[in-house]
Length: 120
Image (cartoon, rainbow, N blue to C red):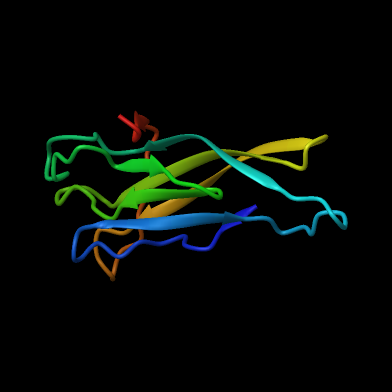
């Protein structure tokens, strides 16, 4: 499992969509269903240059999630972790994928051990 968008650009600040995509083709006639089970981030949702916005992630239809493309100005970048389930109606699998918002173009985002609920 991967996302079509693994890195977000931080300027201008806004919300972008990250869509899950399966690396395996389903059996003929089978439709895969993607569910976003949760989204966390390694920076606090409010305060510290985070923009103090209403939400930092919001599930959308079709295995997509909207992510706020911002990070704390004094931090080392933000890392969102998306937990998901993919099902074909009889079998399912779960996993996680990280989407990074670098502090700037010269420095990659660094995942810290902190975890905050991005969904509010």
